[in-house]
Length: 626
View (cartoon, rainbow, N blue to C red):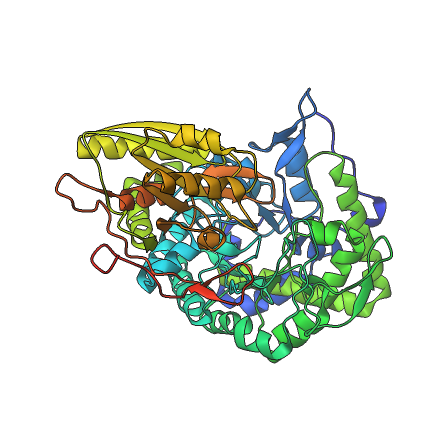
């Protein structure tokens, strides 16, 4: 195996010889946590302090013979040496790292055994719904689905299930809940990750989620300060600007953060967004372009508002620094230094630690911070403050490196009881937005159903659950499917006439429509002309009906396919589509399999945004006017 390059002499000489702390030592340190944290940091080298401030991802490690990145699934000597020699304080794991429960437990146990001193923070993003990392686990239907249920107890239940499963696997911090208020219908990155566009509902559900997850030894982190809900671009690829004035921000985006911080949140994640009303300082990008200061790099936002004004003394964690908003615009060493000076405590993913070559970049970053700390007393002070804050939080939370028991984890993760509860919650969320005497659809003994969406895996998932419904109701469903980009204009009228002919029902599953979705509209028009019942299933954001005309029936299910936006890796959210389809049909006694109960957690506006088409709280049932 290729040997890890030695650290530069500059850093290596400064490092103290550290040993992993035993459980007996930790038990002793926990007796006086404040004093212990101060003593630990006082005796750390500068490199050890810096290590506590980094949370790195090892999503891949090197490439295969075809040049493709190889997912990092099992510990190797190189990664173990990076964690130990650079005194890393934290690691974040992604879907690429997590195959199943035995592999996850083994990986996390070996990550902890590689530490140089204190136990590691092991984090992930198990928000539920749209952003989930466990391939084997209970996802739950997502935040906006919880918003549609209006039930704080279900938010707490979601937190409990996430907390139980993650802690059983060895995780000790979960990056959630999202407390962004989704007050921009065209937001490309938050959407169903938000509970609502109503700040009071966001406050209530996020705090209940925290209450649930805190029943287990797991930290939470609010996303994404100072509020990512009112953007029209994605910070994974762009540098979004929020043009709200300060008064609007204080009345809308700020309250959920204040409320959650007052009710037990452990950490706050920053947003890579520019908010001129909060910080109007200009900085230059790598190309020399003058731009506003992103919140992640902003002292007025992180220190003056979050620390001083809100009196917050918990952890501030950056959003992933390798996202386009930061990595494409700024020198990374400078960005990390600037973020620490602004008030960040843990710098998330400043380097893609995906191969042996990344070790040199990590080494350079340590050297840069050490050299700058020697020149700048303020940076040295900030490194000390943040190292102490991180160490203290580990002691306060009584984070251990005790090996996780695989048998226990296998009994907990994705258990039948958790999966049953997942289905129960998603059934409460399905929202009937419009129904002109189409639903519930009474199945006949023989049924031809056409399934249309823009992805084959989505159609396959729908067809699978149609088959389950056929078995449950003792009927025959012959389903056919069409994959077509609904936002494009590629179908002809004659094409669609042929598709519609002979169908008893059409399920048109949309996914974040915008502008003028010509193919979707043509299918609706031809179904209406032939009097063929058609149901639009809004499979992610509930706003799709705003871009369509003459829809006779529409439900929102708040997520059918999870989408890891950091790596374009999709995963099925089966519970949402299962519950959505069950809401469409009646049994042999004409009783709906799942009567719709959800209420819109957002306003649905027209494309111009100047008129509300379906208001917050709207939701039809099968027992009211149709």
